Length: 569
Image 1 (cartoon, rainbow, N blue to C red):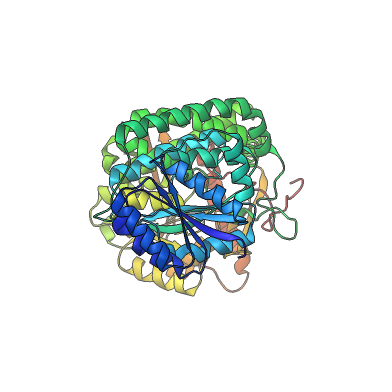
Image 2 (tube, helix red, strand yellow):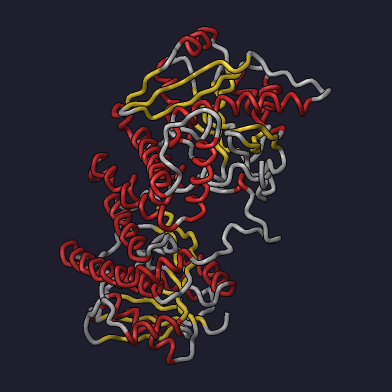
């Protein structure tokens, strides 16, 4: 990409800089090294390296002024030399220089955007530093009223120089460790777009850190105070940007995104609040954080708010009574808060605090009878309540192994958080993208070994595009997955339903028989599948009425399988 250079700020990283430059020069880009008032030995090393590499330019600041000052000096120098874009990367070897081409390609695709590194840490990262990052992430999301900046602290990023130099020439920016987060927030306020790229980050065992625990934390706190004040002034404009029509979720043909491809929400919030706040401040404090976060979602996510309204409208107009308020802002808030609480409880359960979540079996007879046989079974649940409490089944009977079958593309980020909380999480789930022959064979082996496989019946795997069947649900036709019933037929095993509802301070677990075996004769197979789907829809409707705020499908569930609205049904 023409017009692109690399800016490397350095302060006394004499031992690491040679290796960093050796990994950067192979990409053939001009490099500007900004010496931020380093000591004499480092200056000598830099002078030798600049003489050795033809493409390296050395810029020296007379006194140490801070990382931010060095980076801004590098940007001004790069722009004065005619460059249009600059990659910022630290001198200490933390960042993977092999990812430079990925940043270049991203800039080609979006030349006006800031390309941010999204760190993938290994075991070398200090846990305090890892968890501490989440607090800054949350503040940045609040300051931008957006999740457009997934990580504001990684020092590996690419800037369009016109936009960044206009900012640094017109606004007094911090010059030390608070620089990286403040500059991206202020660029976002100016309407600059952001993209992110995953990149490997390490903490060298012999690395030198210039982070001053007291002074830099005070600077960062002051920065966030300024930015929050600035956000309050700009809030109407920032919210207007969020409310503005967007093409996100619209397919190439102009249709709404298919409902089975809609990802679960809340994972980013979970990554910050659940991983950081729960570990450091406890469950009670973290639970209080959910209220303002949910308020933000209700205000800014029209699609989920509209889906919630549709759901409660159908509940209200269905024949049987349902104890909910009139559909509107109040029901949307309670609905989304219940979802946030469910995510929080999942994290609590997998982070070793499961004893704080009480689970009550409504009737254990069906489960105890199955456990006594030693047979495996297929268990169909829903995005209702908290299926994570299926762990209680294994806790009740040590002979039972419970495995969740999850649809890979719906909750990648949140599942990764649960995996970090407890390494056993990954061992108790299987990720699938469809219900094809390979999936069926894998599940057959598990059922034959006596496992309980838990799947959901109110979502479709991403690649099972047209494999749905209509069933009446809350007074109208809705598309349900065929997969659970076709799979049950192939496995030839008993089928049960499982629903786990939050009831006051405890969870109620409802485990009930569905079929000893599901038979799907070749003749008129589709009508048999439809009949089983209708039986499932009837039970799902029963439990939705029992816990109306705990059904967590925030999209138009009654749309056609191609994503188009059905019209009047």
